[in-house]
Amino acid sequence: MYVYLAVLKENVILNKDVLSYFADMNFTLLAYYPKLGIIKIDSAVLLEDTVLNFISSIEQEKTIGL
Amino acid sequence: MKTTKKYIIQLKDDSKSSLSKAAKVLSLKITSSAELSSKVRAQDVLDSGNGLFLKNLGLAIVEDYEVEKLHHLTNTSSNPIIYWEKEREFKPVTELGLLDEMKINLNNISEKIAQLKELIEASNKLNINKNLTWGLNAVGIELSNYTGKGIDIAILDTGFYKDHPDFVGRNISGKSFVPGEKWDLDGHGHGTHCTGTAAGSTSLIDNKRYGVAHEANIVIGKVLSDSGNGSTSGIIDAIDNSLEKGHKIISMSLGSSVKIGEKPSPIFEQVGRKALEKNTLIIAAAGNDSNRPNLPKPVSSPANAESIMAVAALDEALKIANFSNGGINASNGGRVDISAPGVDIFSSYSKNGSQNKLYTTMSGTSMATPHVAGIAALYWEAFPNLSAEGIWLKLEKRAKQLSDQLYRDIGQGIIQAI
Image 1 (tube, rainbow over the protein chains, first blue to last red):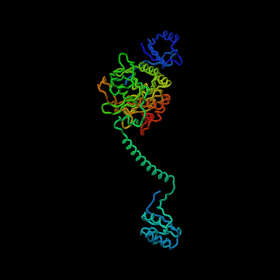
Image 2: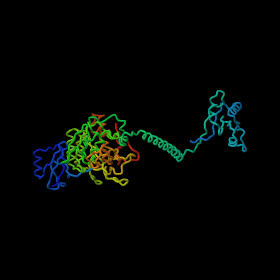
Image 3: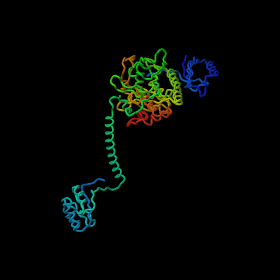
Image 4: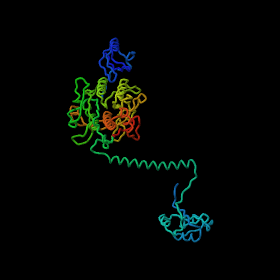
């Protein structure tokens, strides 16, 4: 399982079509940050080289420290 | 042009009576040039202590004369002297000669500048207020009439020790984004230290002021665990929450290292841009991976995002701290924007932290960042209608440039209070 943060393309909202696409891609939507247009998803496969609809950029969750 | 000790004197006229009158008032024997010969040369006349009268010009030359006497003589009505001046040295005007002359003049100016600099530095030292931390002195807090009143500063860190006696009566709210850990305990201490610098006040113990915006509203976002670690999503969750609530300033003394040439995270680019759009300024630590004088490491993430203000750390001599990261990846946006005090910074601490005390001294770009966050609150109080980008520009524009420091290391200079 890989946890990703993804920036939604401009003007994309989490409607039925988008959620249906994520389901088809076997993504689990973990969180949605509406003010930022960012989502947190769980994927069974690595996504770095995958072309994705509705998403402009994506990166794996990282650890941040002091 | 250099001057010698000879003086050129212009007499009223070249009559014998005028000449003898001049000789009398000057108390000198004046030899006329008519008396010069191969045996009696002009310099011989002067060397013998006499004046020389150049009859064809109506001018006299005297040597080693007391200048005060000449001043006195020209002020009397019966004076036979119209004008006098020191003899000047003339040189051939060549390009090289002019350059030499300019070099001498520049050296003189350089000496004057050095003297002026010493005077200013001495004067600055005299202005140090011992009731303020060195950091507050360095950012000019004493001259500020602003307190950050009514401005929300969100500190995203390890939390805050809410029972700290210096914060009694303050407007403090918070939320934890770390599962299972409360925001108001701060089992680490780092968050309480940063909060103290940004928005604390004065130590109850020794009456020393360590906080910048001491009337700002404190908003705590616990995004780092008591062991000091957190995740990107926890931080993003906290920022989203701050934007929802309209917090003006977000201070993040946290980060993760990046490699040389590495581009900023598109996630944090989006975060910073959205925050600016919604009138929130995000300020983040440049990171402490460097070991100067070696080449510094690049500014960490998320401070390396173009739309997030990156803060470097200075020591008390206002030199870049040896650990402070630099704008090595500036072409990708990862530059230092501004700098602030970040070495040996005294501030509040958490009783629940590892040192189990109410105050401590810490170093890091983590300590520089809340100086900037607090001062941003002062600016927003002063300019309530400005946008986040407008505040950013003002902070940079009013930063004090530091001599002998690289833009790569300190950005626009040391932040200054308003």
